[in-house]
Figure 1 (cartoon, rainbow, N blue to C red):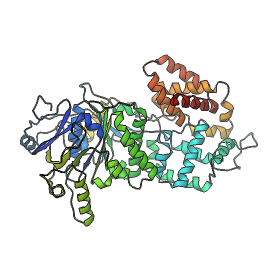
Figure 2: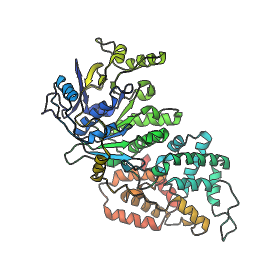
Figure 3: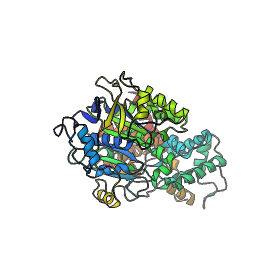
Figure 4: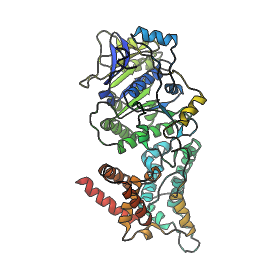
Length: 538
């Protein structure tokens, strides 16, 4: 529905969300100031989410949304002119026009959508420790493992890579090479012990936690080809934003995996996207359902990371909208970044509930015409208190509105409809088949068998050139190679991409991969980091 269809339709710079005594408009230029959709179960949060997602898609803004119950999938199909929908639209002065939106389904388990994968290296030790529920000592050992992998050129792609590396850093003089007196993994073990006392007991605990993660589906999540987040940032042939739906009903059975996955996506976007400043509309909008899972029992280091990413990703042109039952589910320092608010009904059956209602009311700019705390408990299904940012970036006074009806179908789609959408997907075939290339596990096994030279023996006068070639090759090469970078290389990748994206062509990509395949080593890696440090300082 456009402005030409009806005076209350979406315009080029605003999304019409609902109507009460006043009209509720979400300004696109302020949509990257983030938002919050809250309310008790069954009060209409999912429909509100769908209305906002439709508005962004019409405006050409790609959308990512986690679909916990499967209800959001209906956005991919034409809406039905049911009596109650037409009645609500008419009461608002709208002419209901059925519509549908280009949709891509994603699924960590690869069952109801395209597989979503990340590499162990991309996840990093902080988020991985959160996923494994490790204590400080265990997290420290995990950091040691990542550092050793970095220094020895061991790509951490999947779970077996990390398991093999953890086994390799445990002090154990009993393992001998077939043709050698010494342990072939001695350099790795010595390097690990140089960072502190890595004990067999601590490594054993981490290995057991990895088993728990594997049982929850972690084996399918970690691997290649890893997700390219720019595949979320596409428009269809009509210029509308693609709606990316993460099928999360099964994923929610592993809430820690779900929460860490969402944090990883935000961190990756923050790392990859360039600064954009104030744009007429966002580049991408995220809706994170069950947002309280992001913050439950999060250690201070992780909370600091969440706050930093949420605060700064706005400048990258990305809007983040948390969907949860109550505003108190979100820490104050993150809640303060949520400028656009939609509050559905809350119930106050206990003293704690009453405090939650009072806290929710206090997050809004007061309206002299409304007793906000009282209205929150009186709201009917589909009603909400709304406060969006105004032109100068300040919150509007809270208003009681009826949310407009969605144009697409409300409710889940059938398995047959989902299959048809996936068969016509723009990323069909890109992620559907897993790839198991040589990485840390294979390299370690070769060293044990005596068929691979240690990392130090590979470094020579051509090490720096080889490392630069490897970096350039992965920057401009395949999606698989992109995710096999070490931590230092990933920083180099992002800086180099910014400088050279519009200058260097396919010839350099081929050259980089060719040179990188023949030369390399820890010496080259160290030199590249030193040169990069000078570049960043300048």
